[in-house]
Image (cartoon, rainbow, N blue to C red):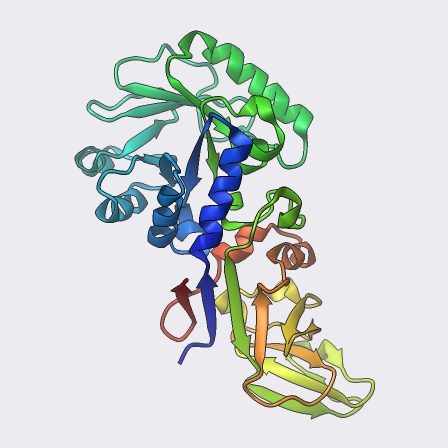
Length: 337
């Protein structure tokens, strides 16, 4: 018995990739499917993205790349995170492409040199002369979603540093830049959050023509009437001031419904209702407008309940929430449509 169910609409993924391709024009869409495709299922999402003409799959680790290679023999797969010498044999054998963050170019592996143009994280500070085996040059934008001026400074620095190597594939844009900053597009854009129909700006995805691909649903496992002065949950953070119907949903922070989501809303029997009290490891409480039967559907994400709304309540970003949903035995069951 699963406590909740995740449904991933691969048609929405394909449509989002198409939306990004229209925005990018002649630049390629590269689908970022790291972290199990932000909780959506890497193998399934990768297939949908490839069907929609994404030109590359991007992951964070060599093991993630190997999983995709087993499913997609001919796809180009880029490992964006750091790698160790012990990873090279497997990466080379699987035909994975690697990112070099220190200028090292391993023999027999297609490599992308990463220039740190202002992120202050992975990459070299000054671009070295690309040698044999280098097929791409890249950077990563720190503020494309919130500070376009600084993002444009990064883009300008990257453009100047790489102009003489324009015969190589240059890529800098993430989802936010692909949608809003034309000069960031270069030859390809590495798009993650937008292919899932999530807003890189933490606003309504529809503002940029995106369609959320994931629904997360559970049910009322218990319904109880609190009398005035009675409470629900740890710490008695919610105390009824009047007769109040409370529904208990069997999803908590162990499932990915964060402890700081008290105050957000979910949809119960088609109505928006507030989450009250303390979110516990395996359950949260929702205030109901009336008594409802056990088993009544609860929509956490989907059908107008946006991950962006939850993220604003929790003071975080939409893709952190979805990438933390726990699937597997006893937790969420994931299906694709």
